[in-house]
Image 1 (cartoon, rainbow, N blue to C red):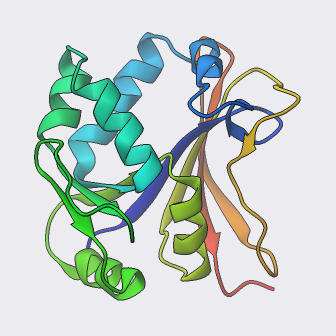
Image 2 (cartoon, one colour):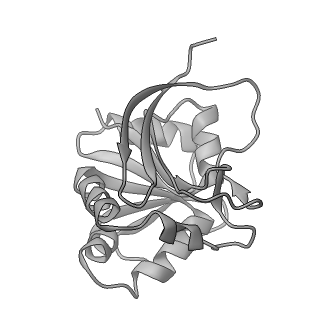
Length: 186
């Protein structure tokens, strides 16, 4: 059975992007050869990338113009965009999922193959969290406080406890945290 893994980089104060849309300048504080190696490690483990519409459009705009090993992976891997408004997905090897999202993701997870990764996509991640579909959160804490920005975790009822599985410090001062959700913990 495939696992659904959420990967995001966020500031110490919880934002995955700056105050302005697509302000990802904080990524520079975490990026280095060890994060690049980790990114390739994750892509080698991925069979499908899952995006919300906004993230999909931004990723497609960036990666279709980029070069290098990560760009090659991003442009060739299967991609699914969850959207009620997008009708066509033009980025290579992409398709739109506009059906019942929770059930479609459950079926996708039940298929054989490599893991499913959700990158960015805070609104989609909030839906996945509500439906208890995420198997692991991988969060890279960038060594920066933005003071304002778009929070990764959106408000929801209750709380979600996590079990820390692993930590990986990076040479830049960033830290990757591997968490397993404990959906039934009180």
